[in-house]
Image (cartoon, rainbow, N blue to C red; front, side, top):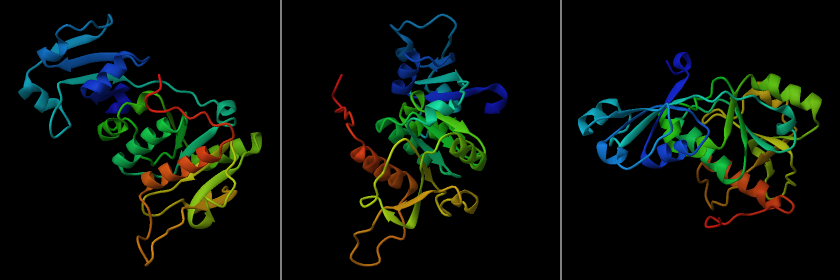
Length: 246
């Protein structure tokens, strides 16, 4: 249905206010009268006033918020020259909406502009994904495509390393992590697919410090955050912006 209409739903005060300040095109806003009161809106947005029972009927959240927006999906083009000059994330079959939303939020935090997803990866405009991004969906571009063909094409055009996370890879604290590069993160249960393994030029891992056998693996979103943090730590002349910087 989302693909047919090219529209998605965003809920919550913070997210809708950020959307109003962005380049995204909002078609409709459904909200409680108290939320609409005193605000000015761009021409072309249909404003629909409702009450709390009405919000409960249309909301996908357990506890509905005061406002919901219906938004046009952006039309994105993948610029290969852009990808070849930066660190980009490659997601191989991420299925959990919460994981994808968190990864997008992490990408935004660490300054990652592009995420390339396999066709099987959960839809970025799934309401649970949108909610989990906490607004990061407005700043990080997601592209869905055949990953094997994508990595093969970019490897031919630009000789950049392709890092893949494996349990038996070299520790990220011992590996020199260079950029630009592609960082491949695999499926929650199966890891990186065998089809992609042949394109991985450097296998890396997050070492465990558990005294016993400990956990078998890390959640993919947690692992993504740790690896991105180490990439940025090793980045020469990295410009670190403090959260309260303007």
